[in-house]
Image 1 (cartoon, rainbow, N blue to C red):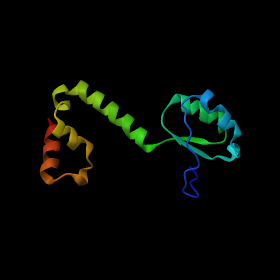
Image 2 (spheres, rainbow, N blue to C red):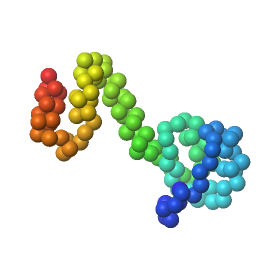
Image 3 (cartoon, rainbow, N blue to C red):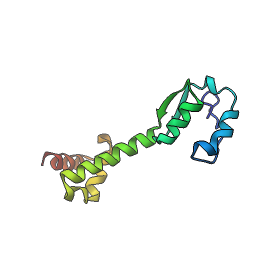
Length: 114
C-alpha cells in the first residue's frame, strides 16, 4: 500500500519466499521502503527483512489484538473455567468500559471482585 497516496499498490498470491521471490526482487525502490505492516508470521518477517532491509517491521493492529485476546482467554480458562463458559460475561469482558451500561458495569465489577 502506498500510504502517501492512500492506494493499494499491489496484491500478490503466495505465502512463501519462493512463491514471492521473483516479484519482490523486481520491485523498484525496495531500499526506500520505510515501514512494512504485516501479521505476526515469522515467515513474513523473514521475507520483509530480506527484501526490505531498511524498513521497520510493524505488526498490524488486528493481529496484535487477536493475539492478546487468545492469551487472555487462555489465562481466564486457567483461572476460572466456569466463568469462561459464560458468553454474556465474555461479551462484557470484551467491551470498552464506556460502552457498558451501569448495570453491565456493576455485573462485571462484581464478577472481578469475586
